[in-house]
Amino acid sequence: MKRTSGAAGRRRGAGRSTRSRLVVKLGGELLEQPADLQRVAGGIARLARHAAVVVVHGGGREIDAALATAGIPKQQVDGLRVTDPATLEVVVAVIAGAINTRLVAALRRAGAPAVGLTGADAAVATMRRAAPITTAAGDKVDLGLVGSPVADGAPRLLVDLLAAGYLPVVACIGATRSGEVLNVNADTLAAHLAASLGASRLVVAGGTAGVLDADGRTIERLTSGAAARLIRSGTASRGMVAKLEACRTALRRGVRDVVIANGREVPLDMAAAAPAPPPGCTQVVR
Image 1: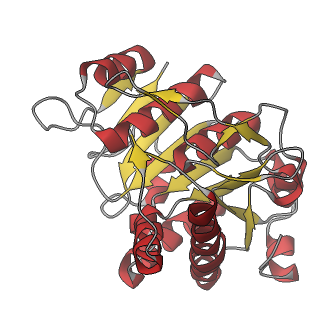
Image 2: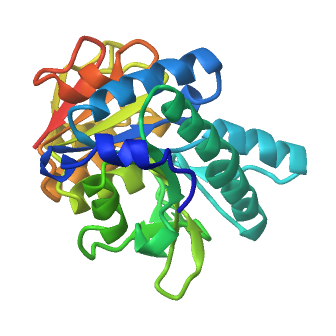
């Protein structure tokens, strides 16, 4: 655990354990430019005044850039990163180091008592090695050093931080019970934490609109079954497949609904708190 905003944040947040819990997943594209980062941090800080919020973030494009600089080939299958030891070293440095620090600092500037950590800290996200996946083409692919969450109850560290009034900011890294560090898809981790914490809503925010239909129009409301059909039909884009699978997991494990939002255009406090999400979002329900 690292980077807290001090005693003032704890005093302001006393008693938040009784407030509704929300998990917000931020795509890395929202964390690269100062204007986007400021907007996102402001929305989350406003939301955290009224709810117990956990933020999970990715950082795919910055990882890609760092891999290119290091001369390490990028490997992805159906939106999931294939991770060898060299790739994992870069992922940890970028996600847990540069991006997590930047986001925590922005949230602190916005007035939120943010705490930066990873899923590997104090068993926030216990993992096992992910099983090989079957691609859309029917091929089996081993993702390497990639984690699949183990459902083992609410993470005590996050529960305690929320009760003390902090805003945990979790980088998408996890570890097995034996201590093996693994890369974790940020959507997968966010869905797991939302379910484990009993969150009422998961918000998945990126740099584009919600789920699009075959004609390129945003679908305002989508059932889990309809999401599965979009995946099977190939209508869902490669990057959206992992998001929809994560949505379905969260719903199956008890989260009330998931909102997929354009974080550049929709204030995240509105996407997270409004009963009916604003235009440009997709609400996924059971």
